[in-house]
Image (cartoon, rainbow, N blue to C red; front, top):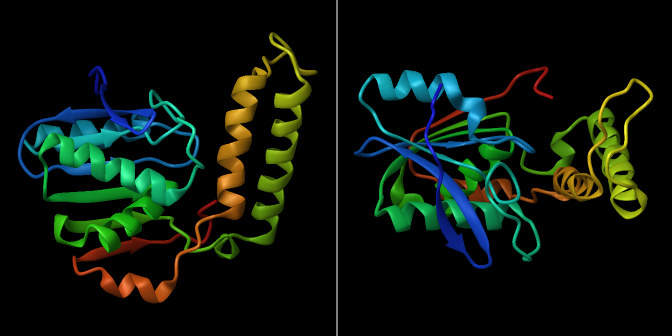
Length: 208
């Protein structure tokens, strides 16, 4: 599967990792919360086998990309994606995003309209209210538990089943990413009328 080393673009005080395979108008792949480009491994292999090009990006604070100090938001991560593409000199692309990546795809198609040729948005929501109450409650509880461990935990801990527990630093990152889904996005549905490219929206009854 997709054994390439990352390259980096500096966005403010963060380093954003990307994987650029092939030439031409690429398919930009944007992953979900807490994931990284590797979830698209079979997709990358399938697309590049046809001779098409791919740019797979690790979103800020995930995968090989660093956090920086700016407040974390979907708008910031979409801006990171634009910056990567502009640094590559790629002014037209197709976009496929999953979950958080699907949200980034909507923002890219809305705010970088002339440059997005097509968008496939898989499992996006426009506001946190797009999630079920059960999922939102779980995210809030998990974010609070990880934040507490980040503040008071210690390295090298194990749970009751003998599984390694995230370090305080890892728990802090997990807490922030979960809280992102609790508080964001806040996308006005009417603003999506600015999107001019063909869009496929994939929404499943059991998305979460």
